[in-house]
Each structure stands twice: as C-alpha cells, then as structure tokens.
Length: 168
Image (cartoon, rainbow, N blue to C red; front, top):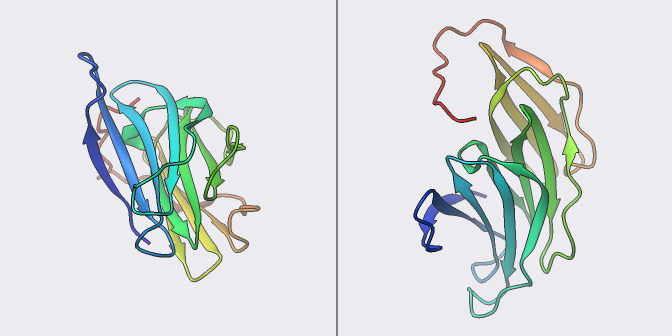
C-alpha cells in the first residue's frame, strides 16, 4: 500500500502536472490521480484493471487543491485520498471504475492554514490523516475504512522544526 508521484506532460508551459499512481489489490489494478503542482486545480481520477491497457472514464473532484499537498493510499481496491482545500484537510475515496465526482468530506474545518495532508493505512480498515496547522501537528483516525474519522488529536502543539515548503 504505497504510492508514487510521477510527472507527466500535458503540454502546459506554466505549471508542472503530476500523476500519483496507487497500486491496488493485484499488480494489474492501479488508480491514477492527476493534479497540478504549484497551483490549485481540481484533481483528475482514473483506474485500470489491466496494467494500463484500458482506463476508466476520467473523473474530476469538485474542489481544487495544490497537488504538492495531497496524499493517497489503498485498502484493497479502494483508493483513499487526503487533500488540502481552503486550508482544511479534505478526505475522499473511490473504487474501481469510479462514477461521478467523489464525495469530499472536510475533516477539520478550523481553517487554520493546513499546509500538507498525509494519509496512512494500517491493517484492513484503519486509516490515519495527519496534517499540520502552523506549528501544530494533528491526526485523525478511522477504524471503518474512512466512513468516519474521530476528532483531531494534537500530536505536537509547537513544533519548531516544521518547515513551510511554500505550498499554498
């Protein structure tokens, strides 16, 4: 359950475009999330079940995000994504052959300048969102494959070693 970012060429001369490839339950199944680094745009989503021979219809998120701040993991054949929207961590997931825009859920609406959001997986149903706000670091856990997340837990309240990478 890992993912890797790869740059791809869309012909844009202004901003880099990147794709996040997430392996699913078998080597042939993968999801692809595409976005723009250095600017805020909607994310594009596709899946394949045959190592990229054919791809599902392209789907687009409702909200925009800076792709540098996003993260994704897989539980079986479902891809789970955390992105920063209007300074808040937002979660969504999608399965193989997604239809329509994914349902996005703002997990913390304090709007306190979240700069990055990471998602990790443990076991078959556990997910953890991790994000920073200023010099604080928070986590939110789900034990039901992202159906619900617990309230945020402060992991560090004044971490002076956090470096602002300039993403916004």
